[in-house]
Every structure is written in C-alpha cells, then in structure tokens.
Image 1 (tube, one colour):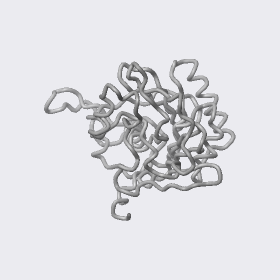
Image 2 (cartoon, helix red, strand yellow):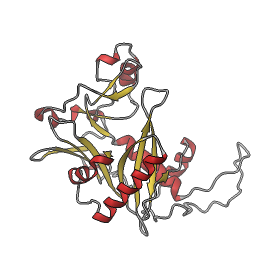
Image 3 (tube, helix red, strand yellow):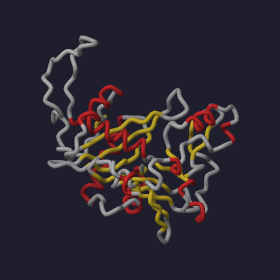
Image 4 (cartoon, one colour):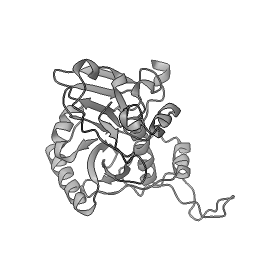
Length: 273
C-alpha cells in the first residue's frame, strides 16, 4: 500500500525491477484523485497486475466500520485509468475460482469467461442459477489472496483506541535501524487469523499493547520473506508472491508496499527452502 501523496517515492522504494512510467504515474494519480471526489475513503495504490492484452491498476480505500478494523474496498482500472469497484466475491465464488487452478495469465479483459459452464445452469442443492465466472471474479479473488498474505506494516504503526478501533499510532516514530532488519518487527495489517492474536485483540487492555496483529515470523513456509537493508531503507520481498515488495525507512513513519506481477503464487516454495 502506498498513499496517493507518496506515490512516486513508494514506486522508487518498492521497485523490484518493475515500476510505472511517467504516463502511468500521471494516469494513476489523476484517476485516484477523481475517485477520491466520489468516495470518502482514504485511497492507496496497491499495485499492477500484468495481463496479455492489457494490465490492471489496483487501488483500495479504507473506511470506518463497526468492527475493529476499517473496511477495505478494492478498485481497478485499465489503460483509461478510470477506477471502478472491483468485483465483490463471496467465499463460494472464491472457492470456485480456486478450484479451476488457473495458471495462465490474465487477459486484461474483465468480461472474459473462465470456464465452459453454460449460462442458466441450476445448482443441484439450491435450485438457483449458477453465475458464470469471469476474469473480474478471478482478479478479485487473487488480489484478496495476495493482500491477505502480504499487507506488511511495521510493528507498532497501528494501535487500538478507546473505542477498540484500529487506528494509526500517534506514538509511532519508526523502527530503530537494528529492529527494522528483523522479520519479527513486521506484522500484517488485517484482522488476525491466529488464535493467540484474536485473544489479544479481544482483551480489555489491548489498547496498551501492540501484539494483536499476526507477525510475519509466523508465516508459512518459514523463510518466505527475504529482508534486505539498503543505504537508507529496509526492503522485504515476498517469496510466496514474487512481485510484492514492502519497504520501511527506519526512524521515520515512511513505510508501504506494492505488487507488480501476474498473480501467480510460488506454490513450490516449501519444497525449495
């Protein structure tokens, strides 16, 4: 995630061999500024998904919700840089997409049909029409899966306020240089999945601690993150999702991450490490 106001720095910091050219930077900035006027969300650039005929530019917005974490809404745009809401997929639809086990790249056309299912087929259990799966469903499922496995932020960058809502921490000044190179000082900015973190989040005194987010050191397989220290920042590359790079400038509040890739997970990583 990179804030709109920090886009050019984020592109430089999270570069892993891919970036946006001047035309794309201008288009993304203009498109997101237009989207900002249409929504009350705080907008962030998420990355770029490569396609055969066209590429997708992905962004997301954060809005307050009735739960601890803000709700996240994804948007995508093509070459016209007009961002529109990404398809909302249920667990059932996401499961159908995963079952197809598609290895081919995206076409770049959202309306492309994924399977040979005939329109109007009835589900045997519900007697309801089974919707056709299109590339828009696949794109939404892949983006959500990547975001769940990545979404890296420094530990301590967020805290719970008195209303038990996750907000940016006013006391965060950045990780110390020695801590910034350690994987256990980074967490996932999303609702926790581990039982221990869920229990920590539910505690009445959770506002005094920063242990309610899943740590990168617990990700599987072990060693799925590569940490590299540059002259003025630390970069974390995901080996599970080649193309995702997170960054943090120690002793500052600058951090973020971007994805540039084909949406293909390295499922052989556990056998390689």
